[in-house]
Image 1 (cartoon, one colour):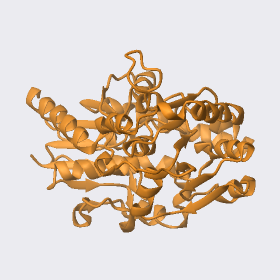
Image 2: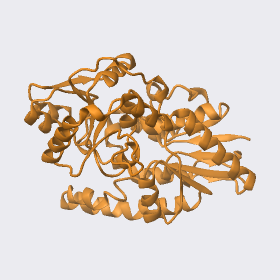
Image 3: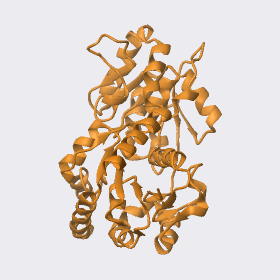
Image 4: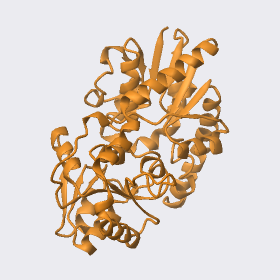
Length: 371
């Protein structure tokens, strides 16, 4: 088969790009299509020579305006509709907007959906409330067009795969499509168990407002607990402004150092409302428990109060407040000795990249055979 793999843009290396990289390994002769791509942000197995981008949007989104790409959302449908993928037998897209491409009617068209675009769907009202009157009118006007187009684009896919049950319910809510859940790939095979973990808590994240790192910082300030934060982002300055003496920002670290930080932390702190939460699984692959906001994807990536009486892999706190994070840390410390590193690591292995490839290939092969 001739295979095409679609991704909106390669402007950062995150969970969505890991999925594309795994698909690229599964289909080494595939061609790649994106609106824009920064060569330094291409996953290892994406061949630059077989990558096709939109010249105008590529220049626009790889410039200093890349952080404002949501502002150009009105342009994306027109760019996607110009992509002609009729020569391909199998088209794999990694997000809803890319499903609007033109494909042959006999082709198998599958969408791996990380989430409907947040600004247009479940955060739509919240985004409006953050804008002034003039900007709000423009936002609503653009949204009317983009939301209708995105809904239409998702009807064109033959099958939809979602990255969690949490996202699957959102897909049905907004697009009225059923989806199959296949968890995204996490490289858990590199995880190892440390014989002498350190006395610090760890957070690994982009430094963005919606990651709620402010809650973790305030909680560790209050308890005087050591917190190490790995990552960079737009909110770095304001987060450093509220950090106390026990909070340290490490910025971007190399993979070897990150593995050591995972393996030697007391626990991994996670306060975001995530669709899945790859970093939480990564921490558990090193046998370290998580203290997480008990909502959304975290309910699927950590085991807490399991009815089958299997060993817990972490602790949940119930609200996105400093007081709730403090309570979660204290409850963890009160029963820290019950967490079994080998059992936590065993739990994390179910999310390994090899499992993703096996399930995804099985799903695609079945779909193609049925067609």
